[in-house]
Image: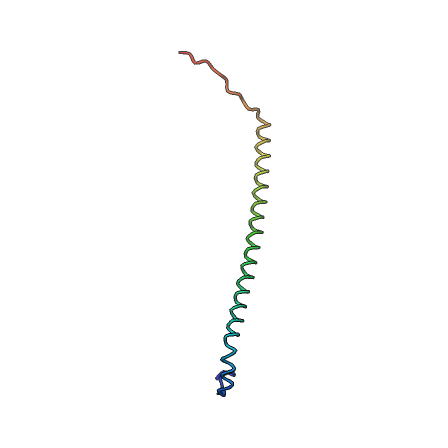
Length: 87
């Protein structure tokens, strides 16, 4: 037997029954606030992860661009010769 499971008078039970919708509403509101807070935290984390990925992509792009430019500077581009085709 639980502490709260004891015989109650009709008046006492009626008072409990009148408070039930308020308790249910408060519980629902609390639950909704927890869900909203969790979504906000998830969103903030996702934004941070996205920003980190974008920074990493930009850094990688800059590194690859610098490597390509250095490679092109080392080997001068050969212009294709226009060889005459003889028949």
